[in-house]
Length: 103
Image (tube, rainbow, N blue to C red; front, top):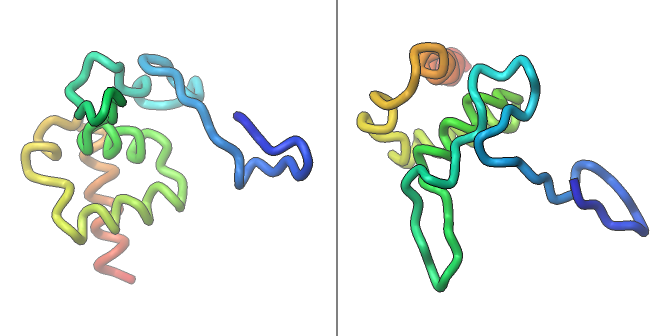
């Protein structure tokens, strides 16, 4: 994590994730690799929405759930993305949707 040396706070830091590695040993799967489809814009490789959804479902913190709700509400989580998820992550997505409907 990169933080400001004057006021170091994890909340405002830049968090680095290493492609193809688990963030925590208990994560269902590693962070998606850079070989997965993405978008190149002005020479900068940007990860795909599908990869972002996977990362959010792997981390599954409150902020990740909120991001998933926002992404789902505007149609970014397509049936194709959902179909490509492993069962454990698909269950988490269904849990987020159920919690949102119950809220």
